[in-house]
Image (cartoon, rainbow, N blue to C red; front, side, top):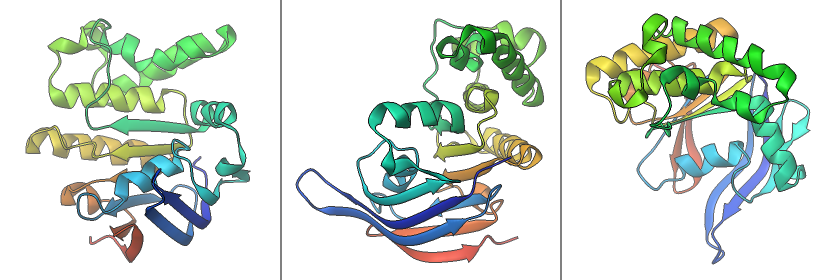
Length: 228
């Protein structure tokens, strides 16, 4: 099940003191599917990476009962490992590993007693995404862009993290592959109750979200239900 999100007084500034992002208040229920749209440089990725605790910020970002900004860097890393899966537009896969090994990479950083379960979950996610059987044993360099992005999704969700953050997940894909990925990603998030927040210019993905936030010049300038 996903985690609810509550933001209060969030601000992110550059090293020179320029305000990059300001979110006075935002609340999302657990299991929400939320799209973030806006022009390049508007602050979309800044918001997404703040939600992952990857940027220094002021205010409160509460995932459930945990204020992410009240943790030190080591604690934030632990929280991400347990609670947040991330999908990047350039996949970030290890080319020397096969699909199954990439999908289960999280297991290497977990206690030994948890590793077998995580590898099983990774295999299940790959199967759900159509990459089971012999495909999971193929080196990722032999996979198409859409297949590699599915491996990245399986990796992000193998640990059954309640939150999934995606940064332009279809940007590197052709239209047909992107459409298949959107269907798989949305179905997987809904079936597991995951809270999904996706930055995207892809209206096909945005239209499948429950809610759409528009970021302009570092502020939320629009908040609407997605078109159906």
